[in-house]
Each structure stands twice: as C-alpha cells, then as structure tokens.
Amino acid sequence: MKKCIILLLMVTMALCAVAQAENATVLNWADSEARFTQEGIPGDFVVIKKVGMKVWVPAALQKAELTKSDTDAGHLARFSAGEGQQEMSVILYDMEGATLEEYKEQQSVFGAVNMTDILVNGVKGIYYEIPDNDCLCASFPVSKGHIVEVTCKPMSDAGWKQVWINMIASIQGK
Figure 1 (cartoon, one colour):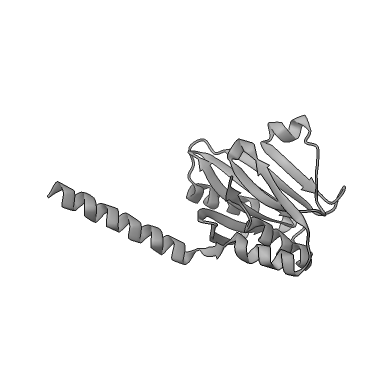
Figure 2: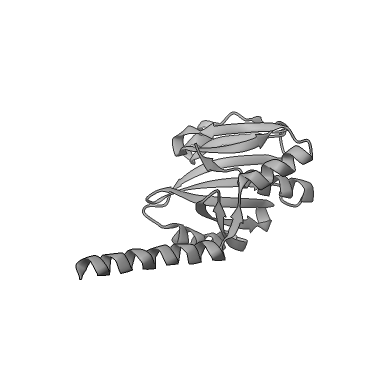
C-alpha cells in the first residue's frame, strides 16, 4: 500500500511538471542558433562560473569591467556595445529563501509587465519587461533563495529586443 501511494505521488508530481511546462513559453538554443547563423551574427558562449551557467554573447558586445559597487550589488558580468549603448548584465540576488514565484510577485513593485513563465533549455524561469528602465529581464533560480537575473537594454530597439530574446534562449547550465 505504501509503495502504491508513493508511486501515485510520483506520477502526480510528474504530471504537474508537464502541465507547468505546457503553460510556459519554451525557448531553446537550437532555434536561436539557427537565427544568429542565418543573420550572420557572430558571437560565442561565455561561462558565468559563480552560478554555473553559460550564455551566448554576440561579438558586438564586449565584457565590461565591474566596479566594486557593481559586485557588491550582485553583478556577476556585464557586456556592452559602449557607454550608454546596448548592455546585458547578469546579476545574482539573495532572496533570503524566496521562491521564483515569490520573486515574480515582487517584480510588479518595480513596474514589471508582460510577465511570462519560460522554460529555457529545460530550466524554468520568468520573463518580464520594465518599460521605465527600457529593459527586459529573465530570472532563474540557481539555489534555494538565490535568483540569477539577466537584464538586457534597451528593449525599445526592436532589432536588439529580438537579439536579447535569442540570447536568453541560449542560457544553459555549463
């Protein structure tokens, strides 16, 4: 009897996971890689060691130096096309035990809109836009209470917005 209950619980959990994936926007690197190749956009993967992830970065963006205040605020990496131009940042937040769902609820305080559950190369996350900051973001849990956020700006440039979304689709565990 105990084995039946455990088996039933495992099947229920698996079905819930499938249902969650079905409600999420699925992004994968294979599709984005084909787009970058077709459009002739060169780039390469960069490993963010502290959170065990890698992300594809176009050659137009160069790694920027982080200041002490950047690293104190959780910035792990920043890539930029130049001062005041296109920029992608990777930031680690200690959410003091908060889950991804709780983090998602908090983002409305910052003016987040178009919030969408995403599944990127098998990893559950959330996508949202913050119009007041002209940026789009994707956030993923990396450990209990820690969220890694990839922030890209500007999102108002339609061409770069598509590049940003394809870069988010490249995010993978290393």
